[in-house]
Length: 220
Ligand code: NI
Image 1 (cartoon, rainbow, N blue to C red):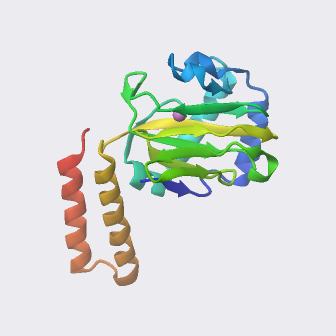
Image 2: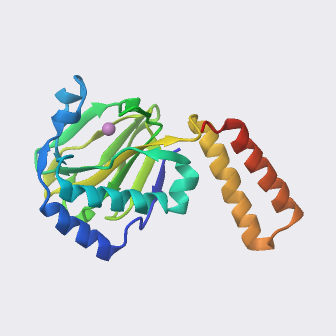
Image 3: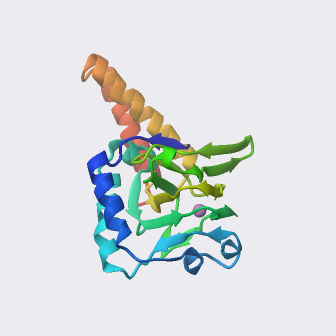
């Protein structure tokens, strides 16, 4: 399941984040790519050793983990450190699949939080490659796309402006994406039922199924 989540970060905090990132050192992104991805990766990333970036990574992680939709869609157990990436004209990131294990953590879910106003740059879509064709995604600043880490994907070349984004991965309590989607649908239906009818017997039965499926499938 791929899901777009709006307003993960409000406009004021987003402006502060962008300003703060102007003072962070950015390095060649190839340093953190595997031997094959290195051939196609052409961006810059915030220096992981730059201490000014640490607070910004923590802010983004906190925003994500407090987002109800993200919690329901990804069932995150743990997040990787957030990476801030910057693409200027001519830069892109060719087709690749993200590493399965990152710093000892299994990566089940990938996410990109867009930090630049989409009107301020051309190109730079995140393109998820599916058997049904490519899906190009470019969201409002402060919005995020969450997708299975199993997908081939690329970032289209930037032809104008600058694309700033925060990317990262989650280890999910639910490894299998089909099971994550099933639980997401069930919990969405359950909360809609609650909104309409309150705590009914039907709501309780759906809650029981949801909780027990989670118990059956969760890897803690
Ligand atoms: Ni990637």
